[in-house]
Image 1 (cartoon, rainbow, N blue to C red):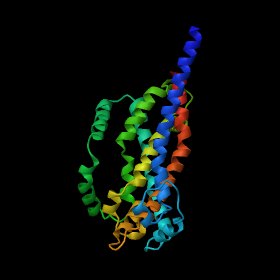
Image 2: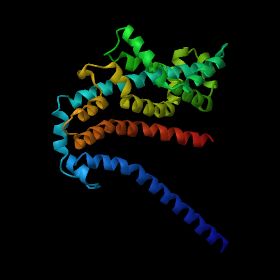
Image 3: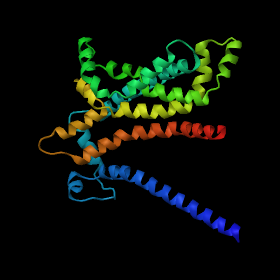
Image 4: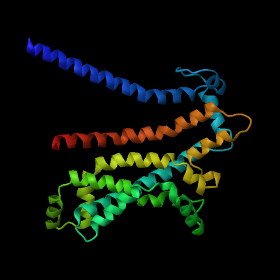
Length: 282
Protein backbone atom coordinates (compact mmCIF):
# COMPACT_ATOMS: atom_id res chain seq x y z
CA UNK A 1 0.00 0.00 0.00
CA UNK A 2 2.77 2.41 0.99
CA UNK A 3 4.78 1.47 -2.09
CA UNK A 4 1.81 2.18 -4.35
CA UNK A 5 1.31 5.57 -2.72
CA UNK A 6 4.99 6.44 -3.22
CA UNK A 7 4.77 5.31 -6.85
CA UNK A 8 1.74 7.55 -7.44
CA UNK A 9 3.51 10.51 -5.83
CA UNK A 10 6.61 9.92 -7.96
CA UNK A 11 4.51 9.64 -11.12
CA UNK A 12 2.67 12.89 -10.28
CA UNK A 13 5.99 14.65 -9.66
CA UNK A 14 7.41 13.47 -13.00
CA UNK A 15 4.23 14.56 -14.77
CA UNK A 16 4.56 18.05 -13.30
CA UNK A 17 8.20 18.21 -14.40
CA UNK A 18 7.25 17.28 -17.95
CA UNK A 19 4.38 19.77 -17.91
CA UNK A 20 6.55 22.67 -16.71
CA UNK A 21 9.30 21.72 -19.17
CA UNK A 22 6.78 21.59 -22.01
CA UNK A 23 5.42 25.04 -21.10
CA UNK A 24 8.96 26.50 -20.98
CA UNK A 25 9.81 24.97 -24.37
CA UNK A 26 6.59 26.37 -25.83
CA UNK A 27 7.28 29.83 -24.44
CA UNK A 28 10.80 29.68 -25.93
CA UNK A 29 9.58 28.61 -29.38
CA UNK A 30 6.65 31.02 -29.74
CA UNK A 31 8.74 34.21 -30.32
CA UNK A 32 10.74 32.48 -33.05
CA UNK A 33 7.56 31.11 -34.63
CA UNK A 34 5.94 34.58 -34.65
CA UNK A 35 9.11 36.00 -36.22
CA UNK A 36 9.12 33.44 -39.03
CA UNK A 37 5.36 33.82 -39.55
CA UNK A 38 5.65 37.61 -39.88
CA UNK A 39 8.49 37.08 -42.35
CA UNK A 40 5.90 35.51 -44.67
CA UNK A 41 3.26 38.25 -44.20
CA UNK A 42 2.86 41.61 -45.90
CA UNK A 43 3.26 44.94 -44.13
CA UNK A 44 -0.51 45.53 -44.28
CA UNK A 45 -1.25 42.16 -42.68
CA UNK A 46 1.24 42.78 -39.89
CA UNK A 47 -0.24 46.21 -39.15
CA UNK A 48 -3.85 45.05 -39.26
CA UNK A 49 -3.84 41.87 -37.18
CA UNK A 50 -1.87 39.26 -35.29
CA UNK A 51 -1.57 35.76 -36.74
CA UNK A 52 0.20 32.50 -35.99
CA UNK A 53 -0.43 31.14 -39.49
CA UNK A 54 2.17 31.72 -42.25
CA UNK A 55 1.15 33.75 -45.30
CA UNK A 56 2.30 33.86 -48.92
CA UNK A 57 4.42 37.03 -49.05
CA UNK A 58 7.84 35.58 -48.27
CA UNK A 59 8.90 35.99 -51.92
CA UNK A 60 7.73 39.60 -51.99
CA UNK A 61 9.55 40.35 -48.74
CA UNK A 62 12.71 38.82 -50.16
CA UNK A 63 12.38 41.06 -53.24
CA UNK A 64 12.10 44.02 -50.86
CA UNK A 65 15.30 42.94 -49.13
CA UNK A 66 17.24 42.57 -52.36
CA UNK A 67 15.67 45.52 -54.21
CA UNK A 68 16.66 48.42 -51.97
CA UNK A 69 20.22 48.84 -53.28
CA UNK A 70 22.02 46.40 -51.00
CA UNK A 71 23.08 42.77 -51.19
CA UNK A 72 21.77 40.62 -48.35
CA UNK A 73 24.22 37.81 -49.17
CA UNK A 74 27.13 40.22 -49.00
CA UNK A 75 25.93 41.08 -45.51
CA UNK A 76 25.97 37.37 -44.65
CA UNK A 77 29.56 37.05 -45.84
CA UNK A 78 30.67 40.16 -43.96
CA UNK A 79 28.98 39.14 -40.71
CA UNK A 80 30.22 35.57 -40.99
CA UNK A 81 33.80 36.71 -41.61
CA UNK A 82 33.79 38.98 -38.57
CA UNK A 83 31.97 36.56 -36.25
CA UNK A 84 34.04 33.48 -37.10
CA UNK A 85 37.36 35.36 -36.93
CA UNK A 86 36.53 37.11 -33.66
CA UNK A 87 35.20 33.90 -32.07
CA UNK A 88 38.25 31.86 -33.11
CA UNK A 89 40.72 34.42 -31.76
CA UNK A 90 38.75 34.92 -28.57
CA UNK A 91 38.48 31.21 -27.76
CA UNK A 92 42.09 30.32 -28.56
CA UNK A 93 43.83 33.14 -26.71
CA UNK A 94 41.38 33.04 -23.80
CA UNK A 95 42.00 29.31 -23.42
CA UNK A 96 45.75 29.93 -23.56
CA UNK A 97 45.48 32.62 -20.89
CA UNK A 98 43.24 30.52 -18.65
CA UNK A 99 45.60 27.56 -19.03
CA UNK A 100 48.56 29.70 -17.97
CA UNK A 101 46.70 31.04 -14.92
CA UNK A 102 45.79 27.53 -13.79
CA UNK A 103 48.91 25.49 -14.57
CA UNK A 104 51.80 27.88 -13.89
CA UNK A 105 52.74 29.40 -10.56
CA UNK A 106 54.32 32.84 -10.89
CA UNK A 107 54.42 36.06 -8.92
CA UNK A 108 51.42 38.28 -9.56
CA UNK A 109 49.15 35.51 -10.87
CA UNK A 110 46.37 36.28 -8.42
CA UNK A 111 46.69 40.01 -9.14
CA UNK A 112 46.35 39.42 -12.88
CA UNK A 113 43.22 37.34 -12.34
CA UNK A 114 41.83 40.05 -10.04
CA UNK A 115 42.37 42.64 -12.79
CA UNK A 116 40.57 40.38 -15.29
CA UNK A 117 37.67 39.97 -12.87
CA UNK A 118 37.57 43.75 -12.30
CA UNK A 119 37.41 44.46 -16.04
CA UNK A 120 34.26 42.32 -16.17
CA UNK A 121 32.50 44.96 -14.07
CA UNK A 122 33.43 47.86 -16.39
CA UNK A 123 30.73 48.59 -19.01
CA UNK A 124 32.07 48.38 -22.56
CA UNK A 125 30.17 51.53 -23.55
CA UNK A 126 32.58 53.61 -21.44
CA UNK A 127 35.50 52.86 -23.77
CA UNK A 128 33.65 53.26 -27.08
CA UNK A 129 34.55 56.89 -27.75
CA UNK A 130 38.20 56.40 -26.79
CA UNK A 131 38.40 53.22 -28.87
CA UNK A 132 36.94 55.00 -31.88
CA UNK A 133 39.41 57.88 -31.53
CA UNK A 134 42.30 55.44 -31.30
CA UNK A 135 41.16 53.56 -34.42
CA UNK A 136 40.72 56.88 -36.22
CA UNK A 137 44.27 57.96 -35.34
CA UNK A 138 45.59 54.59 -36.54
CA UNK A 139 43.63 54.88 -39.83
CA UNK A 140 41.86 51.59 -39.07
CA UNK A 141 38.30 52.84 -39.49
CA UNK A 142 36.27 51.32 -42.33
CA UNK A 143 38.13 48.03 -41.86
CA UNK A 144 37.30 44.83 -40.00
CA UNK A 145 40.48 44.91 -37.90
CA UNK A 146 38.88 46.82 -34.96
CA UNK A 147 35.96 44.38 -35.00
CA UNK A 148 38.10 41.21 -34.99
CA UNK A 149 41.44 41.60 -33.22
CA UNK A 150 40.17 43.17 -29.95
CA UNK A 151 38.33 39.88 -29.39
CA UNK A 152 41.72 38.43 -28.35
CA UNK A 153 41.20 40.18 -24.99
CA UNK A 154 38.00 38.57 -23.69
CA UNK A 155 37.96 38.72 -19.86
CA UNK A 156 34.60 36.94 -19.54
CA UNK A 157 35.83 34.01 -21.61
CA UNK A 158 39.10 33.84 -19.66
CA UNK A 159 37.21 33.87 -16.36
CA UNK A 160 34.84 31.08 -17.45
CA UNK A 161 37.54 28.85 -18.94
CA UNK A 162 39.77 29.29 -15.88
CA UNK A 163 36.97 28.12 -13.61
CA UNK A 164 36.28 25.23 -15.97
CA UNK A 165 39.92 24.14 -15.95
CA UNK A 166 40.07 24.30 -12.16
CA UNK A 167 37.17 21.86 -11.92
CA UNK A 168 37.78 19.54 -14.88
CA UNK A 169 41.50 19.48 -15.68
CA UNK A 170 43.79 17.07 -13.77
CA UNK A 171 47.18 18.77 -13.35
CA UNK A 172 48.81 15.34 -13.16
CA UNK A 173 48.37 15.10 -16.94
CA UNK A 174 50.77 18.01 -17.38
CA UNK A 175 53.45 16.43 -15.20
CA UNK A 176 53.12 13.11 -17.01
CA UNK A 177 53.33 14.79 -20.42
CA UNK A 178 56.45 16.74 -19.40
CA UNK A 179 58.12 13.51 -18.28
CA UNK A 180 57.31 12.06 -21.72
CA UNK A 181 59.08 15.04 -23.32
CA UNK A 182 56.07 16.97 -24.61
CA UNK A 183 56.48 20.70 -25.16
CA UNK A 184 54.40 23.23 -23.24
CA UNK A 185 52.40 24.24 -26.31
CA UNK A 186 52.07 20.59 -27.26
CA UNK A 187 50.54 19.83 -23.85
CA UNK A 188 48.13 22.73 -24.30
CA UNK A 189 47.08 21.69 -27.80
CA UNK A 190 46.90 17.92 -27.30
CA UNK A 191 45.65 17.63 -23.72
CA UNK A 192 44.09 20.90 -22.49
CA UNK A 193 42.13 21.89 -25.59
CA UNK A 194 40.30 18.52 -25.95
CA UNK A 195 39.28 18.68 -22.28
CA UNK A 196 38.16 22.30 -22.77
CA UNK A 197 35.81 21.44 -25.66
CA UNK A 198 32.55 21.78 -23.68
CA UNK A 199 33.68 25.07 -22.16
CA UNK A 200 34.89 26.37 -25.52
CA UNK A 201 31.58 25.37 -27.13
CA UNK A 202 29.62 27.22 -24.46
CA UNK A 203 31.62 30.43 -24.75
CA UNK A 204 31.83 30.01 -28.52
CA UNK A 205 28.05 30.30 -28.76
CA UNK A 206 27.96 33.46 -26.65
CA UNK A 207 30.90 35.04 -28.48
CA UNK A 208 29.56 34.20 -31.95
CA UNK A 209 26.09 35.52 -31.11
CA UNK A 210 27.50 38.74 -29.62
CA UNK A 211 29.76 39.34 -32.62
CA UNK A 212 27.04 38.45 -35.15
CA UNK A 213 24.46 40.76 -33.52
CA UNK A 214 26.93 43.59 -32.88
CA UNK A 215 25.43 46.72 -34.40
CA UNK A 216 26.68 49.84 -32.63
CA UNK A 217 30.43 49.31 -33.04
CA UNK A 218 30.28 48.45 -36.78
CA UNK A 219 27.96 51.44 -37.24
CA UNK A 220 30.62 53.69 -35.68
CA UNK A 221 33.55 52.25 -37.64
CA UNK A 222 32.20 51.15 -41.04
CA UNK A 223 31.08 53.67 -43.65
CA UNK A 224 31.49 51.66 -46.88
CA UNK A 225 28.13 50.00 -47.62
CA UNK A 226 29.86 47.04 -49.27
CA UNK A 227 31.36 46.25 -45.84
CA UNK A 228 28.10 46.50 -43.90
CA UNK A 229 27.20 43.63 -41.63
CA UNK A 230 23.79 41.96 -41.82
CA UNK A 231 22.23 43.86 -38.86
CA UNK A 232 23.33 47.13 -40.47
CA UNK A 233 21.78 46.16 -43.80
CA UNK A 234 18.48 45.16 -42.23
CA UNK A 235 18.39 48.49 -40.39
CA UNK A 236 18.51 50.29 -43.76
CA UNK A 237 14.97 49.10 -44.47
CA UNK A 238 13.73 51.59 -41.87
CA UNK A 239 15.42 54.49 -43.67
CA UNK A 240 12.56 54.84 -46.19
CA UNK A 241 10.58 57.95 -45.16
CA UNK A 242 7.54 56.93 -47.22
CA UNK A 243 6.99 53.35 -46.15
CA UNK A 244 8.48 50.96 -43.63
CA UNK A 245 8.43 47.40 -44.94
CA UNK A 246 7.80 45.43 -41.78
CA UNK A 247 7.56 42.16 -43.69
CA UNK A 248 11.00 42.70 -45.18
CA UNK A 249 12.41 43.67 -41.77
CA UNK A 250 11.01 40.51 -40.20
CA UNK A 251 12.41 38.40 -43.03
CA UNK A 252 15.80 40.05 -42.66
CA UNK A 253 15.81 39.40 -38.91
CA UNK A 254 14.73 35.80 -39.50
CA UNK A 255 17.57 35.29 -41.97
CA UNK A 256 19.92 36.86 -39.44
CA UNK A 257 19.17 34.33 -36.70
CA UNK A 258 19.32 31.21 -38.93
CA UNK A 259 23.16 31.01 -38.73
CA UNK A 260 22.93 31.43 -34.94
CA UNK A 261 20.59 28.45 -34.71
CA UNK A 262 22.93 26.38 -36.89
CA UNK A 263 25.94 27.25 -34.71
CA UNK A 264 24.00 26.35 -31.58
CA UNK A 265 22.91 22.98 -33.02
CA UNK A 266 26.50 22.18 -33.98
CA UNK A 267 28.03 23.14 -30.63
CA UNK A 268 25.23 22.00 -28.32
CA UNK A 269 26.38 18.36 -28.43
CA UNK A 270 29.69 19.39 -26.84
CA UNK A 271 27.83 21.26 -24.09
CA UNK A 272 25.61 18.25 -23.38
CA UNK A 273 28.69 15.99 -23.34
CA UNK A 274 30.38 18.32 -20.85
CA UNK A 275 27.35 18.35 -18.56
CA UNK A 276 27.15 14.55 -18.71
CA UNK A 277 30.88 14.29 -17.96
CA UNK A 278 30.51 16.60 -15.00
CA UNK A 279 27.61 14.52 -13.71
CA UNK A 280 29.63 11.32 -13.92
CA UNK A 281 32.56 12.94 -12.05
CA UNK A 282 30.19 14.21 -9.40
